[in-house]
Length: 118
Image (cartoon, rainbow, N blue to C red; front, side, top):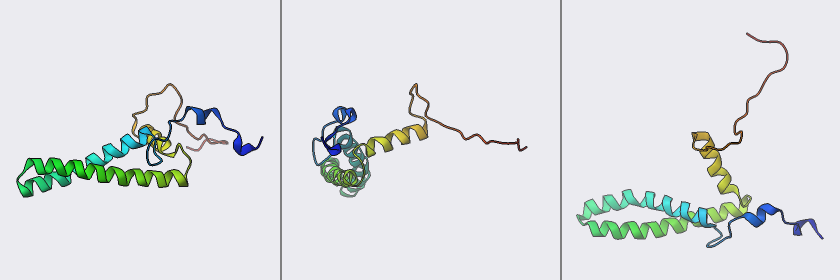
């Protein structure tokens, strides 16, 4: 048996690729990011055209276009990096901003050897 055919248990527990080389977490993240990006543009267009329904239609169209672009970007990242790259970046952002509440140790500190300075 070749080593490239060996699969770890982590691969069995991964989310399946569902659409455009993205799993469900990546798809939902791209849709939410696309919605956030399309709302200001649609509000400005709705104010300029003085029609709320036009703004709503613009939000829907831009959300579809932006989410497709974000998923395309994430699929390119998946090809360059490992499969769990996006989840790892989200976890590191959570740890950095204090949103991760886990029972595990998620910070380290360096200790110096030798005499005490100061």
